[in-house]
Length: 99
Image 1 (spheres, rainbow, N blue to C red):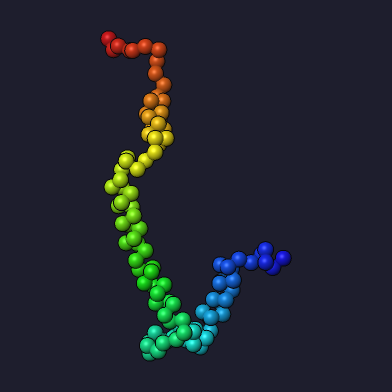
Image 2: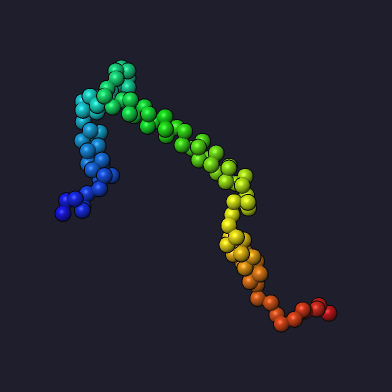
C-alpha cells in the first residue's frame, strides 16, 4: 500500500522539509554560505545551480534553431491542415458581382 502511495518527488519533499526547517542540520549538509565552509552536499547544490543557470540560454538556442528550420522541418500533414483551414470558408454557389 505504501509503495503505491509514495513517489520519488513525494519522498524528496518529506525528506527536505526537516532539513530546511532545522538550520543546524541544513548547515551540516549544505554548509554555511556566510562563512564559506564546505559540506558534503555543497558540491551537489553548486552543480545544480550551474545547470539551472544555463537552462534558459539552452532553451533559447533550441527555439532559435527550430524557428530557423521554418517549414523545412514540418511534415506534410501540417501543410495540408493549414491549406484546409484557409480554404474552408463557406462560399456561395457562384461569383457575386456588385452592381
